[in-house]
Image (tube, rainbow, N blue to C red):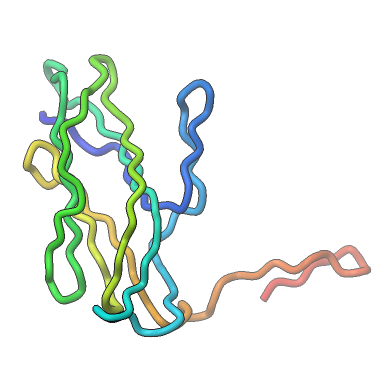
Length: 151
């Protein structure tokens, strides 16, 4: 079995601890644009792509080629990442990449992750100009009687 993606997230921030463990902050699957982005007025957003790549069954390989393509709502494919990274012989590799993303239309963008040229996983990011149905859950501070309200 070839290398595989054990975990993948798009997030706003990644903390790297002293023991080299990662803390993922604000995983995202949706961006709210204040207007409709276009070629002339794109929505620009900085985000981290965090990938945990592990060895498959069999002999560990010394490196893996990681490619990430972004498929836009129109079907346009953009090559975002293409690099070969060394792998730990006993586990694999954690890849934390900061990307400057540029969105020129509303819709779903798919991040296609390929390992050694083989599609491993797809992540989706929805760029919308309207809030999600029902909106977010908001927990308000405690009332004077000790209760809280949720809307």
